[in-house]
Length: 305
Length: 259
Image (cartoon, rainbow over all chains, first blue to last red; front, top):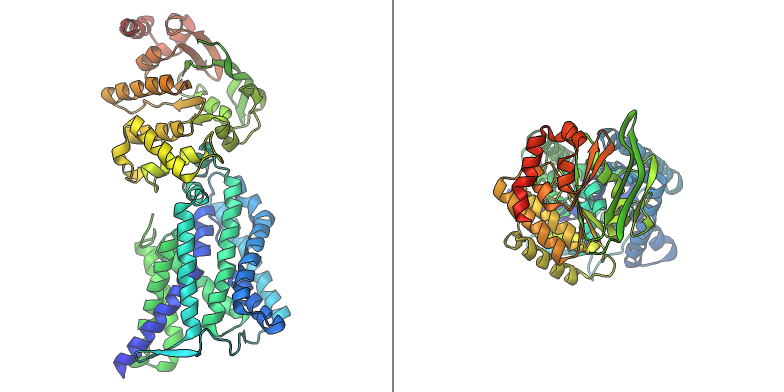
């Protein structure tokens, strides 16, 4: 009984961790490359989630179409966020000071409140989801003694694809090389012929695009979302990004899995030794204790630069 | 040797608040020459490089490259037109490999948008072979010694296939043997790749030896221009910078036989 509780929690924790890792890559890109502290990360994730739900519920469009639509909407939103908010703060700056970084945090905070209130007003606080839609023939399958929802498996598969694609983009393409060059030294990059403004604009588009795309993962995994769902994902993404090292996409992915694993394990331990009802919220707290420990003892992250 | 003008700096004035870093500076650089730019610390040498490469916008004056006004162009456009530079304080992309750093030079240099990833890789490998860093191609740039980092910056600049190369204290901090190696490399690069070079340098005997002409800046003004021999004999230069005349002449004499 005890052992199976541990196994179940670990399997679910790792699945969630894979999803968390992918859903945090947009944050690590924005923060690492542009020094933009995107505290609206969770609300931007929900742009994708809600779009998929709306397309499915009102137009009957498959969530796979919703997935592509959420990427497209994210790229456009990224373009708007760059020119509307970020360009003036970080566009032509060679070295982003702490003061500018703080300004990006405040401006993104304003965006998060604006988005959150819009969700409450236009969509409401009731849970929304894809109802009975599920991936594959059954809504859940047994892996050994563990029951896993097929939607979570689909989400994990898409998560791995997102991370792999982003990693290849950053390491194998000209655009990726210029993004990494700008991340390391914007002025040196401009002196080897890279246009930093163009790269910052494209980075914002990619980061926001991959975030709204990850909204697909959230809506599948969570079964139902509310505007407050953002309040779980924003802080978790920060934990993961700090753990993985700013700007490190693979680091974020592994950081996500570590956090999922810690969450799963501590949930099992708390359930077995203390109180099953308190296990989920308390396990979430352990994730933030990890953040404190990392900030104190390994501030550059586990795979730090 | 042709005497076509490649770069002309016309009446450039650059101020930082109340400080006049460059005051009405005029310099002409001819195709195929090595121009030495010397002067005491704070004379405005690096500032001039920053104006030429587009990092600073001057308050007055214009810069023409290949007869095109580049004064207001952003750095990346100027680089793509064919001006590459190295930095006094080295700036390789530390988290990339030596090969990647050099590929970036090729990908975004004068050939940008016409070069594929494969071609850039080939170009980078050739350039690393040329500068002697080929054995370190897969090492992260951060692991290199200072001399190697400076050589890497040179490789990154050369991979861009520039017409004009700006070398900012390429020799500073190197030991005599390394200085000799770097000087040979610069000469070889100039001859094989038909480069024009402006070099800011404090290692006096080196610049006196390698440069065909010298421009001396002092407190943001050009105080002398001429052959190394003429410069070493100009009283104002000796007073401002070289210290003793005998010492100055010694530099030139020491190197004359090699010419």
